[in-house]
Length: 293
Ligand SMILES: C[S@@+](CC[C@H](N)C(=O)[O-])C[C@H]1O[C@@H](n2cnc3c(N)ncnc32)[C@H](O)[C@@H]1O
Image (cartoon, rainbow, N blue to C red; front, side):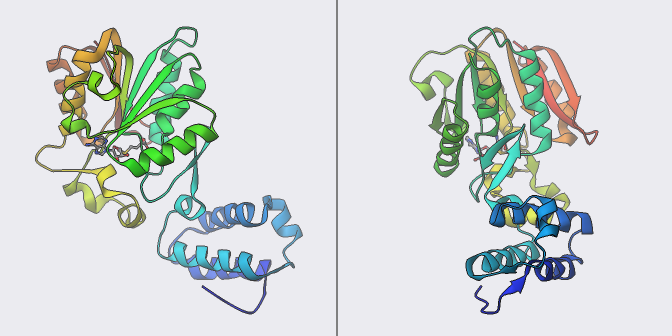
């Protein structure tokens, strides 16, 4: 979007408020504006007020106007900025990767608290996305050897960049987990894992109407949805693979569909796992499960 006239920072702030007020609560618009000012101008919130008479010129003004247009189209602010924060770390995100969710932070927190920091553990994450799970685990469990697999080559590329930026080493593989016979074939070595974790696609197509527009229009479908007829397809496959490649006493952690907690517990117990624990997320929904082999 090209505009020739320069505009004052306070005027563009008013423009954001007026043009977005039908779509977002006023506090959210303020937060978006603060983040954009930090990203485009390097301003902290108090500096926005101090410098509100400044004129925005050329490229910077166009960055604000483009962001305004994208917010009107309900593009998530994380995709506009190209980054998201997860467990205190920064991750590049783009149209190939899901935006990391706070529920997933809770799952990762559970694993970090239950895994030894002193011993060398083998950890596998299935469904890399931005790499938020394996990278955060590697950062907080420095002796762990962390592996991660995703069907999307573009997601893996983004996760590789994120691993580099966060200064951790992860072994990534691009592979369809549903067409994987054994986890050993993935990494060309016989590994017995201490921990396997996955946040696979789990939203049934019938639940699409519950999903907000900004998610539906902008986040990758293949990261989110499963058929109504076989919604546990990923969990069945991963549990079966885990029975072969998880150590005895090793732990399986899943993020799950809030409506399928009971079915998940049944599935895991049928596969001879024990100490099955279902946990709720911060919104009070059944969202995480742990089981021991
Ligand atoms: C719900 S997203 C989770 C992404 C990331 N772990 C997170 O928590 O933000 C699911 C991920 O699984 C990947 N995926 C989908 N189908 C897959 C398959 N058949 N094999 C491997 N990965 C798959 C998607 O590309 C996506 O990155």
